[in-house]
Length: 113
Length: 130
Image (cartoon, rainbow over all chains, first blue to last red):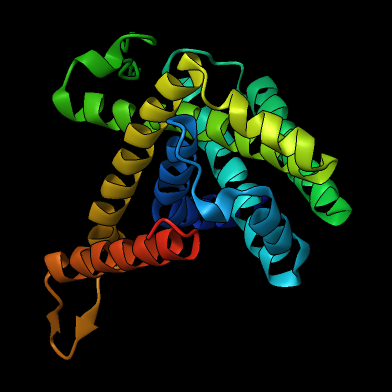
């Protein structure tokens, strides 16, 4: 039976699209408040550190960041192609490697907290 | 008999100006640039959080630069546009059949919007906004 690597790319893409839709707008809203000088209590060092120190917090943060990164990388690959950049293999390699690097970095930073 | 295959001339870089539908598709795809950049910002924030209190607070202070405020505004528009188009697409991507009939698409998309608003308020509440 012919095997395809597409499901491996597609599952995190679809999951990431859903995570971006549900979670990223409110997270952007929170850091926007910080950008405007009104840091929400939950974004202060004590509470943010406590959240990221727990297993549930680590899982939530890693899932949101890694899936959103992967989904964005996949969409950026398609966007590059649509804008006329046809070196798809190079673009795909660079973007997927960047997404994996970002996810690994996220895991490393979380484990340090 | 020889047949010449049909070769359509598609301009590789400006095809999406040909139809408003293509333009909306590209507008949606372009939002991923801002989402991706924002994810990188989140990773940097995590690195600062892991580096200690002084480092994290310097990161929060750096968010207040004019460039950061402009970027946040663009990222917010991109994120909301992605969310709205994603929820509008759910009714096409996963139709729900009940007995003989299909559930109206507005119900499926509407349920996603309701869940989105509830989840957003829960996150804002947990983050101590109100």
